Every structure is written in structure tokens, then in C-alpha cells.
Amino acid sequence: MPPKVKVEPSGGHTSKKRKAITMDVKLDVVKRSKRGETPTNIGRALHLSRSTVVTIIKAQDRILEHVKASPHMKSTITSRQKSGLLEAKKFTCKSLAAGFLLIEEGLAKFKAEDADAARYARVYKGVMDNLRCYNEIWEEVKSVSFQSNLKQLLKMLERPAPDPPLDPVQDPEISTSTA
Image (cartoon, rainbow, N blue to C red; front, side, top):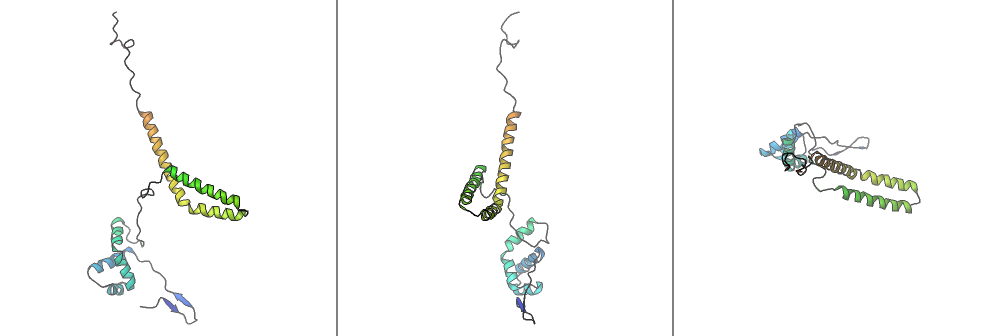
């Protein structure tokens, strides 16, 4: 196997480039492994290093799941798909709002103590940039919460009003007066 770092005649070093391995190749590695071929032989046949082949074989469960779920066989990345942002934990709108309020209060304390406004602005921007993912979750929760509340309101408005109790004076069939 060639070394990863080659020494050029000029004395400089060039590193070996990484190459992406398609799902087709990964699936071929898994199939060959299941047939009993050794990682060394698979690597030679597919022009991959033995360690790469072993890594693919170790990840074969994820690869097979990905192949079942994905029609795109030319993709190079095996990823875990999230079914939703909020399924792992229940982020309520109130708790997220409280968290952001605490962060804002903490930043306000730093602003009050810091004489360098430019430094505070950089810190504030950095914090807000890093919280962007939570802000997106909060916005989604607010949207879902608003939609849920709106649906409940519309259901209440669509319900027919209950029939008033029968009044014998106004209903001629129930009236006891004789004409």
C-alpha cells in the first residue's frame, strides 16, 4: 500500500486526497464480505485500503438501512434521518422562551459590565449565531402551538349553539291555552 504522504523531489510533502465512496461500492463491499471474502481481497479488487473495507463492514447495518430507505444509490454519505426536531424531547414554547429570556438577561449583565462595546457586540453576535438552531426549534414550536390553538378556536366557533329550552308560551304545539 502506498504511503499517505509522498515526498516530492523538491522536498515538499503532498498528502493523499480523500475520495468519496459511493453507496454502490459500499454495498458491493458488504455483499462480498457476506460471501466470505477477506477485507484484504475486497480492498484489492475495489482499489480500497483494508482499513476502509473493515470500516465499511463494521457499518454495514447502517449502510443496509440507508440503501433500503434511499432510492439514490449514488449518494456518498450514510446519515441518520431525524423524524422531527421535537420528537427526542418535548420543547415547550414556554420553556424555550424562558431559556432565551435567561440568556438575554445574562448578556445584558455582560453589556453593563463591559466598557468595550465592540467586544460585547462580537460576543452577542457569536452567542446568537450559536443559538440559531434553538431559535429555529422555538419558532417551530410557536408555530405549532399557534396552529393548535387556532384549530381549537375554530372548532369552538363551528359547534352549533345548543337548542334553547322549549318555552310553552312560544311553541304552539306545547301551548296549553285553548282557542
